Image (cartoon, rainbow, N blue to C red):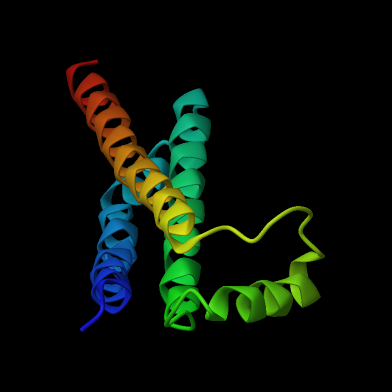
Length: 130
């Protein structure tokens, strides 16, 4: 098995964790509805929406990386993406650059889930004690 194939499989497995990140947002969402008419609701809803944006990006990348089997597929892939998003200027990114970008999105998703849980836990504790 080539390195590209193995790395794509590993990326696919990690990108599919968007489901767990999305599920982990549900308890803080319940708290958001409990605090519906307070200023803290805005912060929680913002973190909730940010986390789901990253979940959407991970879901999209999970699907898109299945289309790339080798470096030769990148030009075709970029041409297909250009039909929807517009033509990219400059050179085609390598697979390593694409994997690096996905890694950044993956970590942002993790940190946004952690921030959501930290803020919601702090607000639940404040509401309980106050």
